[in-house]
Image (cartoon, one colour):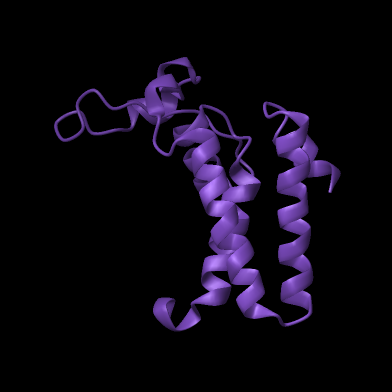
Amino acid sequence: MGLVMHIFANLSQFAVMEIEDHLEKLRCFIVEDKIERAKEVVSQYQVKLSSCFGWGGNHHLSEVEQDEVGTALIPRDTFAGYVALRTTGDGNCMFYAASIWLVGNESLSDVIQLLIAGELFFFPDYYV
């Protein structure tokens, strides 16, 4: 899981190792069809992640590069003062945008994607 090391470059080495451990446990439990154990891992992961970053601390958004073309397309009569922020354009912009809102960069996009996939996997009846 070297990618996780890259994603969490801003965390301490101990925190990165702990997150890698949680992701590996989640993968193993899903493969082994131990759904309740996998749910526990996701729950613990959500708590740990929220304590690391503090959800919605978007005070840093002024430091993120604006997308001038996107900003020009925002209707000023309805959304005065809004700006579009630049994300990587590879089809994962929703996850990048959520990560930017949380921490000011795209580093959490893979984690957000994993947590959403886990949510959909564990609660399919709720989303159908």
